[in-house]
Length: 123
Figure: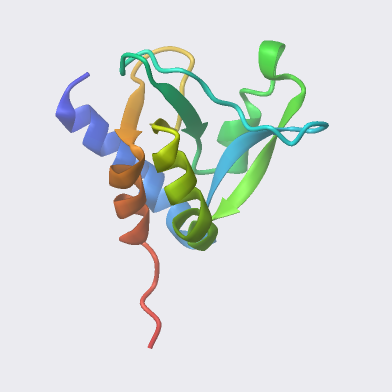
């Protein structure tokens, strides 16, 4: 995938996430585990798919992920709690994950910096 396509997908993700100030991931209803899978782009790495809307995440709650449901993570919580844990575990982030086509994966630090750029500045 070209760098231009990656930037476009990330820009669309950030635009959609700005209003709600949140991202969506899939969480198991019973165990409360999150979907994490082998990265197709990074060797020996796992990827956590995230989506900009509940509707985009819901589409993936089928087959092997049918026991999962979209769960909202505020950007503030992501930056305060998730960033360090995912960084320690060497997890990369799948942005608006798609089963087919262009798959954008970013290092958690790069993704988090992009999220931080859409957080409103408090006066």
